[in-house]
Length: 134
Image (cartoon, rainbow, N blue to C red; front, side, top):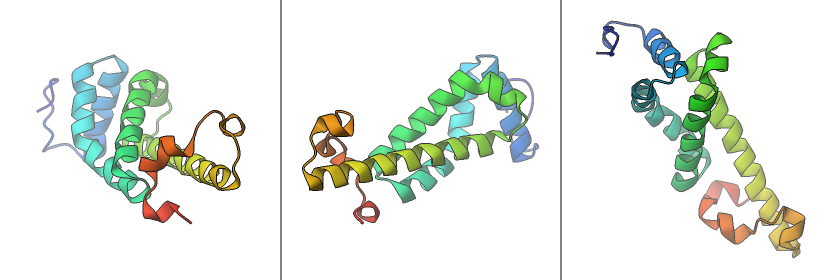
């Protein structure tokens, strides 16, 4: 049961997400927690197919942090909450994969950390699942 009297079992999934989204936009931390409990497993599942578990969890945290900080403007845009979260997760995962590949190439060519923005490949070694070692 949601705090505002709506039941999770009797509402379409997107409608419940929308209610939680709107409450989060009003800075309701309990609503953010409920939204996390409902949607984090699915998002983490997608991210885990693209990145290591550690990287996937970091991006999941970033997505929900973004959600907390940007919900008011995003909720007004009329986009589905789950679509917004999944899109944000995918964009962040793509950025991370690109960075890992760039660092891998820079490391192989012997470029200095200065040329890679001060980031070393060793800093992201734990993030390289076998699918990224292409």
